[in-house]
Length: 276
Picture 1 (cartoon, rainbow, N blue to C red):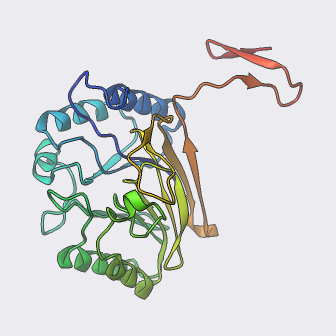
Picture 2: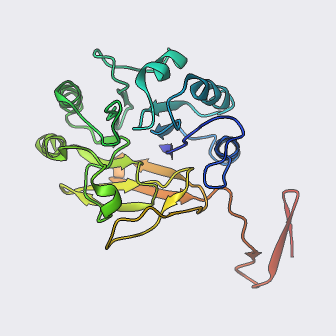
């Protein structure tokens, strides 16, 4: 199964630029690239910060953009989002019995869980008792199947002083649940605007830097520096039967000189054909 992960879209007003970038155009380019290269994906998951301020008009713009995406999609809120206008703009969006934007997607071989960690009005993430109870029930139902979790906030300290205080609050309760059930194979998140991978509680995780600017790699200090690095999305290949999962980063706006690996000569790309 192929899954696309897009994160930190941060749509604001039409024509507005964030650190020199038009995020509406970036989203359009991202969707066009997914359609052109990964139309066979089973799902495209947007892991939060869909908008910059949670404004209704931004969700309307997002809905218009997603109408051109050929792959089925799921939306998760991030700290920049607002739950009520998100649900109002997307009445078809999956919510749980308490109104949180979280849901499960089960296939023959695995279960995907999408978590709502939004704490309205705060940057930090939150999984309250009701959301954790929902998660525990889904993990129990999935017993015997591998589970893959998608969320916005990192449930782990990443060694980034500027960002570590802004992750998921009290991640221990969340991680204890995952340990107890023992069937979670990977955690995917955004929020930190960097490509990061590792393990927490013995579970592999990966973060995508997404469509917005990238935070500077500052391991020894807090930093307000952001870099206008190339936007990226993830291509996730899941083969649960063989216990294999691969995550590729795709810098979809990058254009580099292309060479033939066989001859070493420069290749010129012309209207879909290649000439040396």
